[in-house]
Length: 270
Image (tube, rainbow, N blue to C red):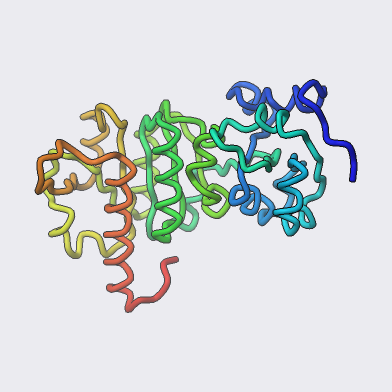
């Protein structure tokens, strides 16, 4: 077994720079932290450049080690510098960016799409990606000033779904909404003041749908809501003022996925 790299190693110092968005954007690389993320990355041909792991993690995740193009041992202290997790699992992959142009994701259009406008919390963004993947959505679009999908916390919160589900990044949320509509999707804005109750929406959810989700603090701007085909709200029956964004997104996506499957006789979503 090779001698593990220490914290002062030049390669590790260079790799740690990928915690910065500017470095990730310039180098087209990002970090996948933890066994689920590494497993997901290894499932995408050509995605993984190198995997860093502690000796203990190498023994524990021998199946990942055998699948990695390069597997490099590092000391526990060095791993703590690579991982931003409170309790590092001991394995981090350096991955190539997986950006997909929005037009490619809409040709052909998926039956279910999530558009996130100015979603800045990495945990929420990662969880929306995970929920969209679980619901069978075709893609997620991050728009405006949304968090970088390759932020380490976003990658970790997606629990590998970032590698299963296409994600596009675009500056203009309004253009993304119009592109979805032009591709034949009905755009539903998740809006607390919406006039359509999610659980009474019925056939409105049966066709190809793009859900539009807004910022955690202030929701969707009025000019973006105005572009949507319908405004849909989730009823609050208790005393909570509102739902967390990722929870609301999961409910909306599953409501659409369930209605679409029933309408299609339980055939898989395209």
